[in-house]
Image 1: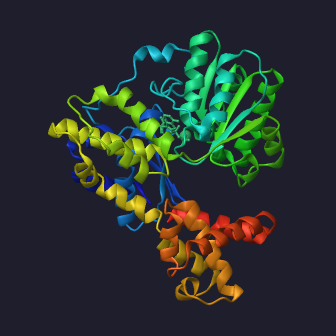
Image 2: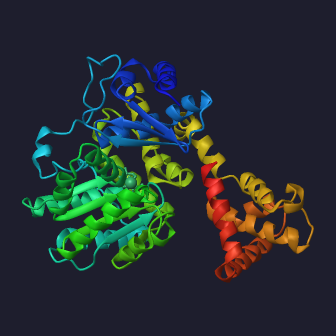
Image 3: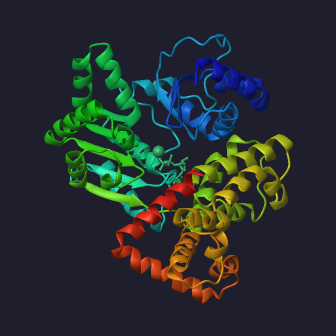
Length: 455
Ligand code: ADP
Ligand code: MG
């Protein structure tokens, strides 16, 4: 893709998001590149990138895809002195909840800013994240380094970044003189590349090696980039030797990150590695209730009716970020229309979002992809044939249907030709058992999970 194509897409976005949003959020995005389906922009702050991703991400992906580009996600590189925009937005506004200027003096001058709302206070603890939360608290509350690094991993939107920022805020309050730096791995890489280009490796090294606590978010971005990995490794070792705390996050366990060097993996594993599990319904509801308390007063007059939060917690189960996006949308609706959001209005407002959620989790799609994967006909996957060639893929599909959708066993059973739900249970158990020892099978499962998640 080129700058020009982005220019056209930008124009089309203007009509969708409205003039104000356009000037504030879309116009300042500087196209960097599109590679392997990842569309990257330069932005002035992490906050801006997050905001754009959250509220305009889908629209951007849709428009760029409509221009014939293969794109499946966005990424943002923070660059505080981006190239001048083609038509300088004279009215360029600070993002709405503006960051107080004082924050740039809070010892973060060399890292990325922390999001004010990502604190321990706003983090809701449940079974799925209690270990991660406890470890984060330990790091934030003690000056001794008892494990190094702390490595948090888990799926998208489960609170890794939130916890890291919470640690950052806490430490900055408790140890105002310490140099506490939070960066994304992308940002780390970007600085490294820039230092190389500007022949300022000394500055780069000094900056990173003089840190007291280093947090690097989404480390998988470093994987496969050899020179950056090398430098990361040195930085890492030098900080560990000086007994400085390091906290890292990723969407996968160290050993599961493709392209990450073995020695780095083993270094990472020598610390405390903790995963955050998918949320339960109760936790999602708890998070929503907390968000209403925290955000509610940003939306004058907004009223959310009975049962609406429960509805959201039930429907949007994959990712807390989406859950929040949905809540914000409802707040906005209610506030702008000065009308209470009841269940009906909620369904109406979120129709598009729920459609994609539903689509992502359909059993139909799981069945189709599984049949494809094993090279059998869909009818045979669902039908009665008992031959192992069909029965095993069928059980795989049952297993994935249980894992990846919120459907109950009877609902799944209905989708598999009206079998008894005990048959489904048996199938799921079978796969559970077999996949523990059969690596080809567990590889199949992984491939299918990936294929389904990205579709
Ligand atoms: P990740 O970095 O794991 O992809 P984030 O930390 O960015 O996820 O979380 C996504 C959104 O969900 C954030 O706005 C965050 O505040 C919210 N969130 C996730 N988990 C929790 C939680 N347990 N309590 C409160 N908010 C949460
Ligand atoms: Mg994150």
